[in-house]
Length: 312
Image (cartoon, rainbow, N blue to C red; front, side, top):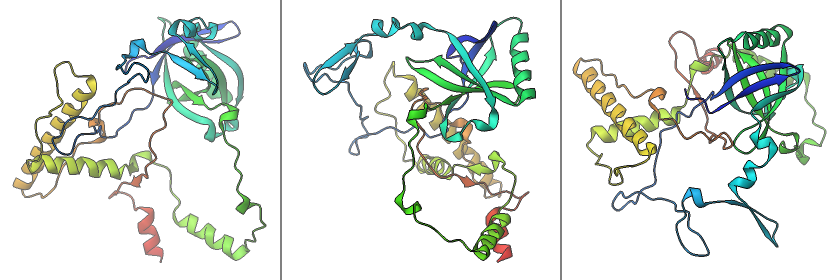
């Protein structure tokens, strides 16, 4: 992993040097938009509405508009803000861990010690574990002041970004304002149904069926000879296209393994695992696309669906 930020956790006179790493990554198959007639790559250009020229990133500034006037803010303007120059994760308070509402939680980051003597890191970690407390902290990353929860996961300090209080919408549903009667019998039947689905949460038992089926679809097209040389693979292409080529190579290997399996009479087909998916550019402000997860079929443990069918 590559550190995306370096700084220090500070509270009182305590200073804990740390490095920040993104704790999550996307397993989605990277896809591009292409012209259906010739397979040419469709790209979005940053074109200026005044002069009509395509503008490079280094020549783009940001602006605030209120409908009547516009204020342009340059990179130097942002760099001049005192909070932007801060490299500290400031502890504001230590709160009971169960008081942090999950609806406020966002992107997660790992914090690794960044000193030859990680004793202060270990001391903070052990203190949080023994007191069952979570540190509420503030820090600056990518020109934004962040609120976050500092907690422990598997002996590693984790920084969990939190939404600000005014970013959480207040629910208002008139349908719930009316009085709803729930009988004891209905409650008992509902509780019995819940009981039939009871289980310990095991994340590895769940798989993104959409991405699995998408990989199988791409692998099948490769096997049927429907793949062609990428017309948009140019010299000096970005790392993004390299990720696509790596994926295609992984899929080709999957096809070869599938052929070998059939030749051996097993009749099984192997597709790439989620680890083969290329990493996307780090952008913690964009939520991942909602997609239902499906529980993986397991021979060692009956699925809830099977339990229900058996009890019916």
